Amino acid sequence: MAQAANTYNKKPRELSFKLTLQFINAFRQAGQLLKNGKINPYLIKAIVYKKVGNRPKRQEPRRVKRRPKIFPHLQKARHLYHYNKQNKNAYA
Image (spheres, rainbow, N blue to C red):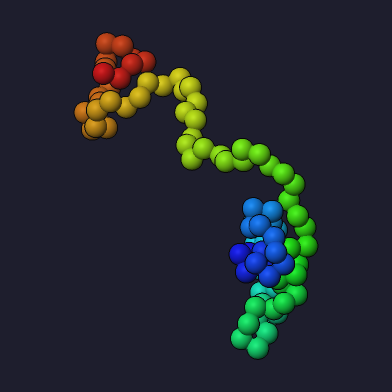
């Protein structure tokens, strides 16, 4: 992707990562990924074929939002929890 961007004077951020992966897989399956020990020039041309639009502030957080759950968090080791016979629905 970086090589394709450099070859065609584009910024790597202007190219689609997902489309690049799809092209690489397609060329690999066709057996055309390398030609004479170098990356196929048609692959490089295909990678820069579609320009991604302007995506300001396109940076996703690397976190997972916790969803509310009906069960309380496990605060002790699992083996320390035992079934409470007085209250059949609760674990102590």
